[in-house]
Image 1 (tube, rainbow, N blue to C red):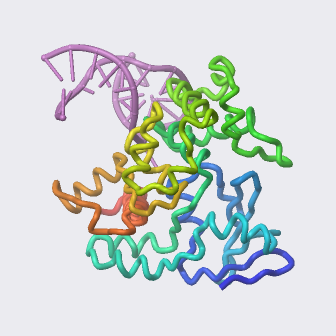
Image 2 (image 1 turned 90 degrees about the vertical axis):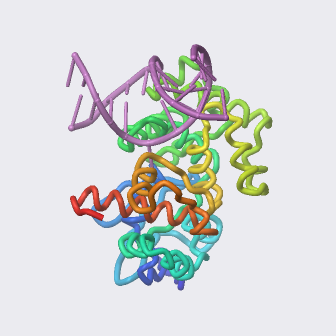
Length: 277
DNA sequence: ACTCAGGCTACGA
DNA sequence: TCGTAGCCTGAG
């Protein structure tokens, strides 16, 4: 349930909305943990949120902003208890769900997601965050103490030398190529939304620096294609470990992408805590 | 100094 | 078509 109060939006979590799990599973790069919760920027807005008494509270957010942005961003109309029920039919996944329950796959801005995951290739999370932060500071709009993610049209107009300030190395030419071709209309990010998943994947990989993995991340975290199953090194190792060589993610259909996130979060947790699977 | 990090392109066989 | 070197950079 959702309640609109003077000081913000109150969402009943029911164990199916954890800020920690949602923001720290590698799907987004612009939210930071604060003393009381999390704070970050999406769709040109700053958001502070925290958990209290079984609610997730979006501080200072009104009904209109919730409906226009955050409801969709957190995919709050999706019933995760149904998703989890289906995924738990698989024994390995049942364990992963046990650790990852409350993680929600976000629906972020398409361009921001694509650009962020171009930056992510052969890179680690702290550095990805640092590059994106510099990108926003230099080319985004000042929205009152914070910076929005720069618009495609802005990046399309940036020169190669000028972009070096973000220190993304060989990825910079990919970013520029993508921005220019998207800005010109040659590649239409919104059009991909109406395609079937395999077609959309092929479409995005026409961009330089966008292979299957980056396309899957963009489609999962920016489009809501929940069948996209990005295979990074962690997932490859985990899949090998639990399922062996002949794994087919279609066993999780139509929620392969959510399963991927659960598995990823679960493996990282094990790595952090030094437990064995 | 050297490896590694949540891939991709370009090139060779 | 398949395999892999090289790529920018910064942290450990």
